[in-house]
Length: 107
Image (cartoon, rainbow, N blue to C red; front, side, top):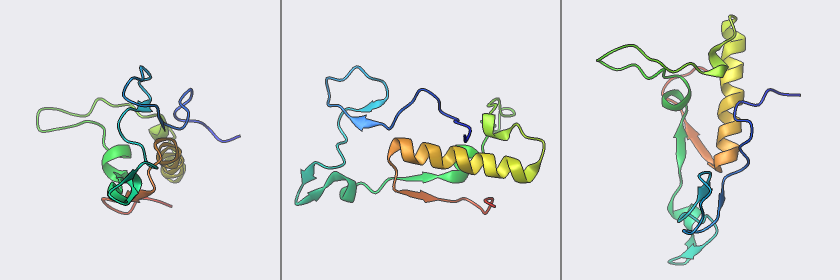
């Protein structure tokens, strides 16, 4: 069984503006037709792989403080594979059909 990096979080769904679920879309409904086409065609969201999964939170004021579960393996190749698995789990759960890269770091 593959490792889960976001346990307890199912696919994020539209629940409407009255939802109290912190893991739900309140206004974005990908299948709702607006101006003749579904919202998901108006808003083609892409997740930036490097910025989302490689950064550690560092900035000009200090080093990063984020410890990511996909960065734990001592082997660099396995670490890259773990990061890729975490990324695609996230893309799937958030419903993002597109992703982009800052640089090449997939195996």
